Length: 125
Image (cartoon, rainbow, N blue to C red):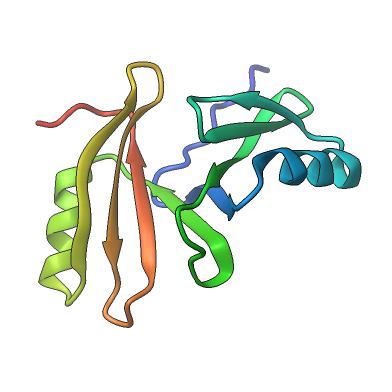
């Protein structure tokens, strides 16, 4: 029996942790969890565990509260952003390409001001 792909739509699917020192952060998470790191541009690194990407680490210009960003995968990025604004949230960043292989992202603030990211592999309609 073949394994069914997991539908990750509308689930938290990515986490990013900010740091003032990417090298020290890489050493720490490698020592603690055995993660492997790959650069993605000058100020970003992806972490991999057992062959699966588990998150990203970015160099922050200034610390943000908690230093963590979370992302939810959605099928329709613009429809999700419309729902955000219709329900009292605000769009912080509209559709932005990550890379051709990785899709797009956007970000919003919920009514309490919490920053949440969205990702999709689907192009704009």
